[in-house]
Image 1 (tube, one colour):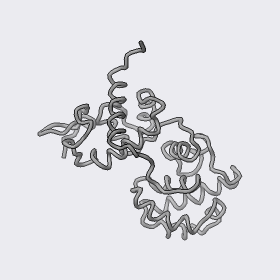
Image 2 (spheres, rainbow, N blue to C red):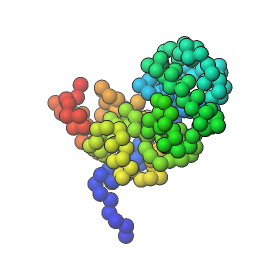
Image 3 (tube, helix red, strand yellow):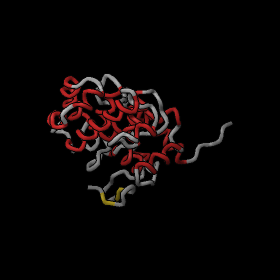
Image 4 (cartoon, rainbow, N blue to C red):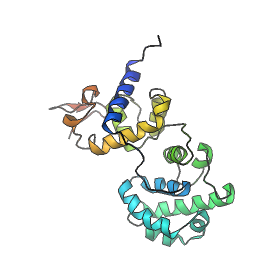
Length: 228
């Protein structure tokens, strides 16, 4: 017999099993056709909806082809093409600067290591993990976005606060074979049910596992704040 699972490990496995049944087709929702497009789409998705990003990148990706074109582009043109994206001025700079680095230091190829990716301007661990997983088929971490952060805390799977600390905590709880899918499942659940302000606990498939389940006068144990 194997070593019995800890309560937190068992919680994580049960959550994953139920969410896989609820969202059997869960996967990345950004549109892209190559690694560079993936990198740019993930950069743009920070604090912006994937739906909005997909709308803007449809035009952006048609206008520019390859890192050389972005690196040599007028930054104002990039900015105009993404002007409905949150923080578009900064993100236009990230795109141009990162593409210049890709051309000058990586032979025009999107890097395939965490260290090299996070050296690109505007790229942190979250973005790098997405690019590694969906661009290079390399899974060495868990993508922690706002949905993963919120729901893993609400479910009591982690008590960490910072995304980097949450990721390291989750790596020891979530089975390695599920690291990539875990993110997509929590994102789908966060969009459909466990929203930030008004979670639908009555229609939640993991409500009975959740120490933060909403009830009259109850408190969200993950944040210590009353439910809205």
